[in-house]
Amino acid sequence: MKIFISADMEGISGVATNMQLKKNDEYQRFRKLMTQDVNAAIAGAFDGGATEVTVADGHGNMSNILVEELDERARLVSGNNRVLCQLAGLDDSFDGIMFVGHHGREAGSERAVISHTLAGVAVAEMKINGKVVGETEMNAGAAGFFGIPAILATGDDAYIEEVTETLPEIEGAVVKFAVDRFAAELLHPSKARQIIREKAKRGVERAKEIPPYVVDGPVTFEIEFKGTNQAMMTTTLPTVELIGPKTIRFTCEDYITAYKHMWGAVIIGMAATNGVLGHANA
Ligand SMILES: [Zn+2]
Image (cartoon, rainbow, N blue to C red; front, side, top):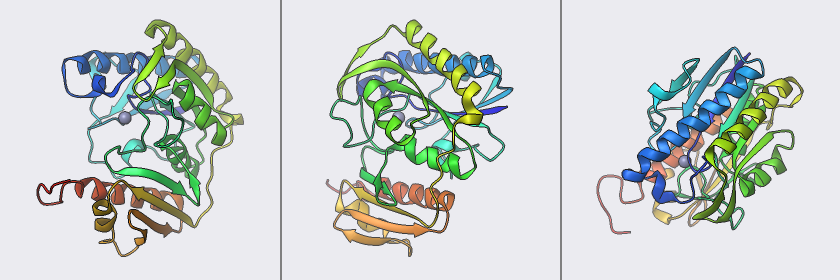
């Protein structure tokens, strides 16, 4: 039984504010905590019957996890030039997907810790077939395209509440309680890791009974960007229609094609933030 782990950082045990996740002295502590939460999920996966685990580091530049401290039974996808974004390495050979250290969506709960959708600098809102989604639902749809169920989510209580609306069968590990976008009431990381391990085990044991989250095609994405500059530059792609000053829409026949298209559009939007070839004034 093969398990895929998409690891992010905002929902990691001990994380309360985004300054801890930037490249500074604090960051090294939080890379370690991220690696330990991921290890708890890996241990739980093997406890539950997994035989292979692949982890994709999905935060920031996607090379945060300390490979030398990762559970040696797992493989790690690290580095950021990835067509499948946070899901690089995923295919239909996997039997379950876990979201470790993920977070609430932009404009979701007013409390969710470091809430954003994929790229805080660029994306104000993301809709799939008219439904507002966060990263977890968006990634769960890609897993669903491959017939893979979403079996575990770990993060703050507001995030777990949010994803459970769309993915009611997912095992949710609450590792902290959201106070504000930049504050949280934290469990001790050791305690949080026990919860992650138990929930991960349970998720793998239940994987066969959890239905994959399948979004039938054609699949339409609407992305509201934070700036008009970001939205406009994505219209270089012939499939993109500008439907508002900051909002674009495109449709693809199937989910995985639409997912890649979304990532391409977000990359262009991020590049356009300060002018694609130089520094414009924001
Ligand atoms: Zn992140």
